[in-house]
Length: 273
Image 1 (cartoon, rainbow, N blue to C red):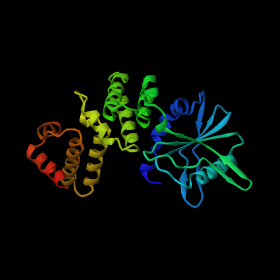
Image 2: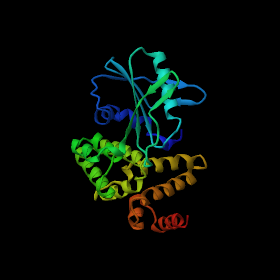
Image 3: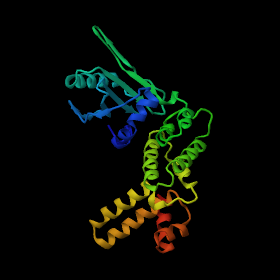
Image 4: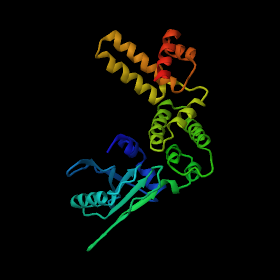
């Protein structure tokens, strides 16, 4: 399964209790993640398998594309989990794709009657999460139905509230923005999130996760080809990262403390591609 098929493990693990509470409707006191790899023909790891209050095993899969084999996959997970635990198993598939949900939630074949739960995030009003008004609920709101609200306005509000709710804690704000950026890719809302980030008048471009990671990765890769060349390639990627949020060459040059002509050359290259 490709990178864009599911949310990253880090994001899921951070939001798991909130997903259970706000989306599935399960209150959790104690949760222990079961880091278990289920291997058959293909190398697959379940998105979430957790012991909840020693009462049942919670299995959650996040899916952004319809898969006709999903019932069979879920059944295989069920048998694998059952093999290592005697507790009851509750299985949920959370669908976050833009296409209409078409996956079945059961297998009925001769003596086999198997069923799991599917939750389509498009059927949940984003207002329900926005009203809860916690950083986690605000992040989850991007997966829901915006109803008749304009996408950009909703995202702008989410980012503004995240900034306010994190009380100027830069590290915490960056963590939630990183989650929002990743979730937005699953709903083709990445560009809208970028525009929402631009709205912050005191935004620190170097602190945005997407810029920081890209810049550091560029320097790391470039250093392997020679220190001076590596530094230059890192700066180029840095310009490309900032250009996603700031189109003014003078401002970009000031942020990176480099010559504006070099910035213009890189920008022209971007436009030509």
